[in-house]
Length: 204
Image (cartoon, rainbow, N blue to C red; front, side, top):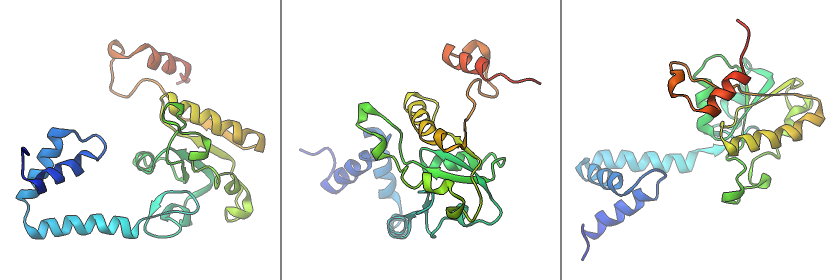
């Protein structure tokens, strides 16, 4: 016998398919939907359908967008001589929030992971190398590529692989600094983070 009626069970099961959603969270979400008005549910469904119908992948940088090319690639005010490589579209948002970066982006949509069976062919790299040529970049030569992949094993492997692809082309390749997070205490920092902080120290 089902714990809940079949429609509720189906809704819970669908929520459980979402990343990071377990049984209890799925139940809370399902019952929240049940408390919503028909109008609210309609807006929720419409928003999901709009995302699937209107969002595409930018053919230049692979960012998710509703215009082609995306607003970063089509902007005339951004520095076209710098490209920041990130793993996922939401990583791009994190960089933008700093308000200190004004270059272009390239989204890989993943990272190298032998355990999960993800190799170089699974990353969206094919359109990165052509972008380095001025004729494919509004006449501007790319002078630096910043590798802003995550500071974990997969991100490091990805950065190393992309770096090996780019170095022979003569472009400057940099990696985001890693180390002590702002506002933390040395007492609670693990040895790997401390090691990175020491290695990336700078003069003041």
